[in-house]
Amino acid sequence: MGRIYTPFPPSPLEPIPKSPIPARMSTLDPADWSALRALGHKMMDDMVNHLAGLRERPVWQPMPEATRAGFTAPLPAQPSAPETLYETFQSTIQPYVTGNTHPRFMGWVHGGGNPVSMLAEFLAGAMNANCGGRNHAGIVVERQVIAWAAEMLGLPESTGGVLLTGSSMANFVAVLCARFYALGEDGRRQGVAGRKLVAYASAGVHRCVPDALDMAGIGTSALRLIPVDAQFRMDLAALRAAIAVDRAAGHRPFLIVGTAGTVDVGAFDDLASLADIAQAEGAWFHVDGAFGALATLSPRLKPLTNGIARADSVAFDFHKWAQVTYDAGCVLVRDREIERATFTQATNYLAHAPRGLAGGAPWPCDLGPDLSRGFRALKVWMTLSAYGSGALGRIVDDTCALAQRLAGLVEASARLELRAPVKLNIVCFGVAGYSDAQTAELVADLQEEGLFAPSTTMIGGRLAIRAAIVNHRTRAEDIDALVAEILRRI
Ligand SMILES: *Cc1c(COP(=O)(O)O)cnc(C)c1O
Image (cartoon, rainbow, N blue to C red; front, side, top):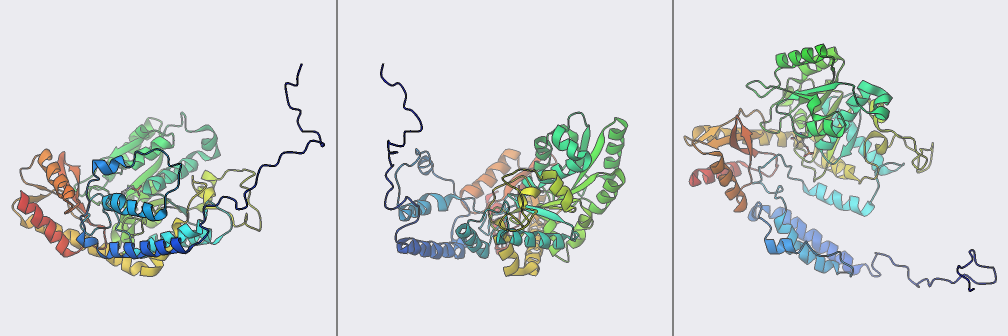
C-alpha cells in the first residue's frame, strides 16, 4: 500500500518548498507618483470650479436608465486607470447626485456643505485615521469638537458625546443611554423584557425616534405620541395626563423626548417645561435638535431653545444648518460616565493602557456603538474654525429671514396659501384648490426640470409644498424666482 497522507511537519531532511516572493510586493501605491499628483490637481481645480459654478447647473436631474445600467456590472477583476474612472465620474455620477449644494435646493432639511469641509475630507482621507480609539490627534480633535458643541448648547463640562453618521444614530445612542439610566447594567445584560418602559414625544417627532425605540428593543408601541397645539408644540397638559395614565397602569415613564425644530414645520417644544416634567418623573430628558439646536448660535432665535441646556442628551447634525459636508451627526450626553457605562465593553484586544498608542481612554468606541470610524471630526473642526460660530449663526438667521420672505410672498398671493406658521426656516404652503395629486405633480415637475427642489409633506391631512431653507447659498432672488415659477404654472 502506498502512502495515503503526507506526514506533517516534513522531516528536516526534506526542505520546505519556498513560495516565490516577487521582487516587488504587490502594493496599491504607484511606482511613479507624478500621474496621480497631476490627476489630483485636476480634480481639485474641477471641483472648485464646480462649486463656483453651481448656479449655472440644474439643481437635480434624474439619472438616465442607460447611465444607471452602467452600475450593474460584475466585480471588476482587472484594473482601470484612475484617469478613466474620473472621466466616468464626471459623465455618470457628478451630474446626478442629490443637488443639495445648489442654492435652489429646498427639499427635506439638507445642508449645502462648504468648500473648507470639502478640503478637510481630502485631508482626512490622506490621514486615513481610525477614530474608534487609541491615542492620537484624531481623538483629540473630536474631543475639541464635542466640547465646542456642549459650549454652544450651554451643557456643562461633564458632557460627553461622539460624532455619528447623523441624528438618527444620535437619537438611537440617546435612547440607549436613557435605557441604561433606567435599568443599569441589568438592562444591558437582560434587555428590557417585561420592564414596561414608556417614552413620550410630540406627534411631530421625527420617525427615527420610534425607530430608535425599536432598535433598542423597547418597541415602537412604548412611544406615546402626544398631540400638538396650534403652534405644533407638544401639548403639556396632554403629556401630564398620558404619564398619569401610564403610571396608574404600572408602566415606567423613562424618557421624554423634546424636539427643537420639528422636521415638518420647524416647531420647538417648550423644552424648559419638558425638563421640569422629566425631572419630577425621574425620567431621562432628551432633545432631538437635528437642525434646530443650531438656533443657539443666533442671538435672535436662541430663546426658542430655552431649556436645551438642561437636557440629559441632545442629538443634532453638523451636516444640516452648520453646513459641514455629509455625514456629520453628533450626540451629546450630559454625564459622560453614563454614556461610557452604556457602551463600554471589556475585551483583551481593545484593552486600554496607561501610555503608548493604547492610552488616552475613554475612546469613542467606549462612548458609542461604532468601533472603526473615520476622521469626521476634522471637517467639523475646520468648518467651525474657518467660519466661526458668528458666521454660522448669521446663516441660521438669514435662512429664517428667507423663509419669512417666502411666507410673505405666499400670503400676498391669492392663489397660494400658507399651511403652517413659519417660526424658523421651513415654509409649508399649497396652491388653493389643488388636489394632493396636483401638488405632487407640480413639485415633481420643478425637480425634474432641474429648476428648484422643494419637497412635500402632509399638513392637516393635505399634501403641502415644503421649502426648507438650509443652504447658505440661497438668496432672496431664489425665493422670488420659486414663487414666480409656481405662479406661472398654476
Ligand atoms: C434630519 C432630522 C433627523 C434625522 O437626522 P439624520 O441626520 O438625517 O439622521 C432627526 N430629527 C429631525 C428633527 C431632523 O430634522
